[in-house]
Image (cartoon, rainbow, N blue to C red; front, top):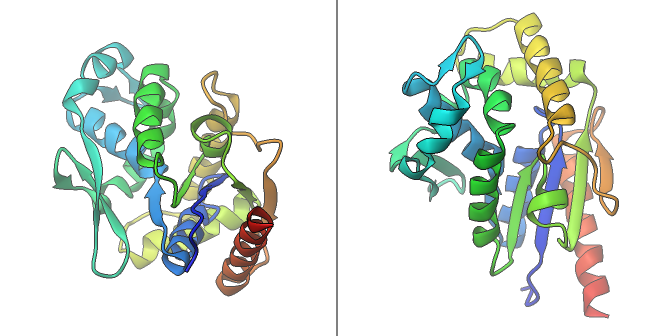
Length: 233
């Protein structure tokens, strides 16, 4: 049992597997897991449902004016996972669809949206004992996190993983569509003005292009244990 709780920030590119590894680590060490990307997806879904997204263009003014009407939270499930709630509705399956993926980067670049969700994320980590993954967790949300990891893999590897995931869920798509989505999101995430995707100076890089799930989970756990051991010295 670990007495000293820390904050673990796992950042990286879309479809790099960071959510799965963050969830697995949180489960093994008894921490709370938060998928920050799911929060942006939920806001994107709300905007799409309310006609504020048209052909990839977001009506930012009306979305910002409506942020007070959008509540995002998480519901723990019996299998240890968390489902995303949008105004108390379970939207976990819907926010993972390609249509949402194709618009989430355009929504997440809006400064007011990021400010609102960053504040909520910081509140979630106030008591520490949290594993949060996203794009700007180690740089903006928790710049003083005790453990920071930046996950990367080639666009082709990430697209293939995402395509297989969607296919397993019965979601119709092609590898080419998914690869285009991955490359487009990378560009938007890296070049946005507000909290762009970048490696924190003190983050440890994990390139999992050729790693098994078991290998990356073991790598993360070993890093966590070494940090905890160092904090106890």
